[in-house]
Image (cartoon, rainbow, N blue to C red; front, side):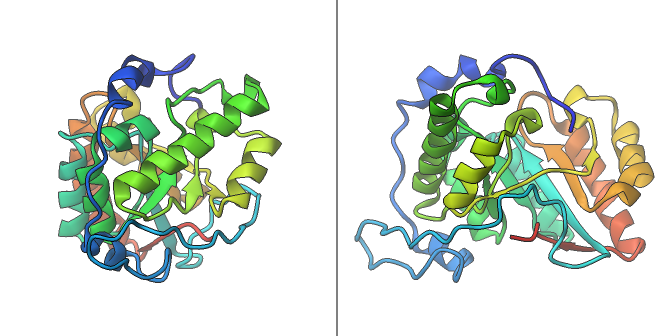
Length: 255
C-alpha cells in the first residue's frame, strides 16, 4: 500500500485546536441510520449507551459484501466542512453508499458532518487521531492511544455510532494495531486502487486510474480532506456512473 504524506501528517497543525471542540448532542436520526450495527436508539435526552463490542477478523480486508462485482468506495481524512458535503451530494446523486475513514480530530471538530455521514447510510472507519503515517514505527502505547482515542472521538461525534473499520494512515499497519482494532470491532481496512487524488493529478488522471486499475480489486481510495478536493468531487461524478455502466454494484468492505 502506498503511503500518503510523511511524518505525522498535516493534521498535526490542527490537533490542539480540535481537542477543544465541544461534542454536539445526540440526534435520534444518527441511531436510526445504522440500526442493527450499533444497537437501538436511546430515549430522548438520555446519554448514549455503547453496545457490546464483537471482535472481528484481524486480517486486512479488501473484499466487498456485494461479491465479485462489488465495489467499495472509501473516503479518507475528513470530515471537512468544504469538501465532505460535496462528496455526500455526489454519492446521494448516484445512490452510492461509502465508507468514511475519519481522522479523530477532524471528527471532533465537525460532529455535525459525522452525523450527516451516518444519517445518509454510510459507514465510519477509524483513521487514527492525527494521521501519523509512521504508526508502524511507534510504540504499542502510542498506537493504542491513536486508535482508541480516535474511536472515542468518532463515536462521540456521531452520537454513539462506532466506527466499523480501522485504516492505518498510509497503510502503516502492525500486527499489534490490527489485533487491537479487531478486538474493538473494527476490521482492518486496506485498498486496491489508490486514485492518487491526494496529489491532485487532475480529474482525468483520477478517472483513468480507476478505469485502468479496477481489475486489481474492489476497494477504491479517495479523499475528502487535506487540501483542495475539487478534482476528487469532479472525478466521482464520472467514476460512479461509469462503474455502474460496467456492471459493478456498490457495497461495503466485508467484516
